[in-house]
Image (cartoon, rainbow, N blue to C red):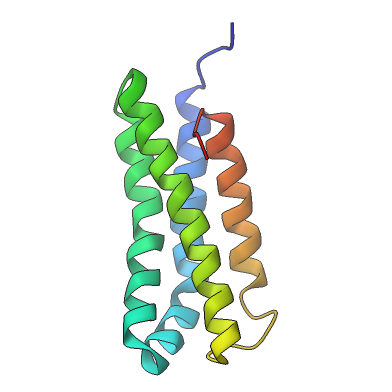
Amino acid sequence: MQARPSSFHRLIVLDLAIEAIAFARPLVARIRRADRDLGEQLRRALSSVPLNIAEGASSEGGNRLSRYSTAAGSTAESRAAFRVAVAWGYVEPGEADAVDAQLDRIAGMLHGLGARR
């Protein structure tokens, strides 16, 4: 039987998700100036990650796993949005690498917390 993740681990992933937003903020602003729809979708997806982590941390059972899974899905959406922005030429290749690495780390931690993505 797998041990229940401690609140300490949930706190770390929440802090990392908020930190990812701070890293991404200047790029999101640039993307939004070039493509308002993509910028807004990216902003919503990035915001969804810590909000769902926080909700999951305060939930139990299937609701907890559902919120963590939603957060994991939002990390994937955010990563894809940065790739789309590069493809459109809104940001240069490599500019979002630090944010992508942070989101990848968050996704791994969410998987460890039981996310189904």
